[in-house]
Length: 255
Image 1 (tube, rainbow, N blue to C red):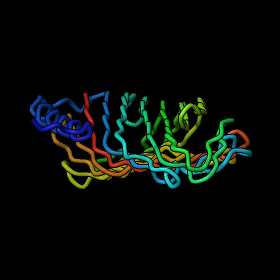
Image 2 (cartoon, rainbow, N blue to C red):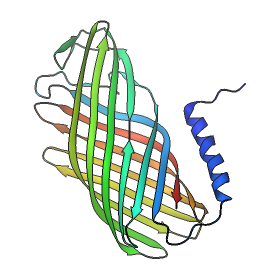
Image 3 (cartoon, one colour):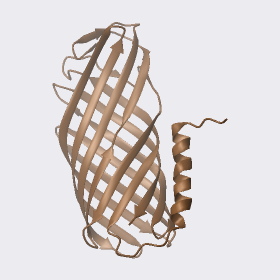
Image 4 (tube, rainbow, N blue to C red):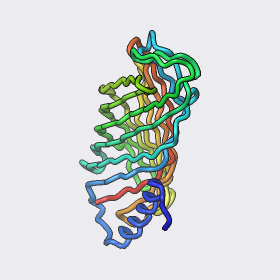
């Protein structure tokens, strides 16, 4: 019996769903809802941390320790209010695990981890978003839209070594600007650029997707591409700047 990894099982599941849904009757042009399922592999770029930001030791979960590649999924439901106006909700959980031997003494959130100690680290960054977008261009070949995103982040960074452990959690609100550019080269193929981003003195955040779109049926589109999430903050409470890479594949289902 061949055992499949969670990523391979999901890819095969998406392929099976595509075959089944492509055989369904076509939906009408007045479809008001879109369900967006995105998943794949996630890899850590830089992940630089110091907690507290002014007195904690600065270290990297990706350079000083080894962060394993992980699996991710994101779920979005979009309601088309009209031909140009839309409202969507997004659930995007993320968790990465790191491990290694501390290369130097680390003071993290009130706990001390000596040099040479085996350390397990965790990085969580769950995102909940509500987005309004207005498509000021909505034609046969181009869709260009801008809007606003209200984001709730549920973040946590933790270190553990033997009986010593510490975890910093943070839940906060982040306003972002939203943009979407879609170019359709034929009824079956197009390219997509989609982003939530904003920079301010308190920090910055960018979530950007570059993807190819393959329409399987009037109700179903396959998307595949590259996503990155980058950003962070530098203040007395926390210093953390992170770059995360996503190899993404997903389905867009209109109904």
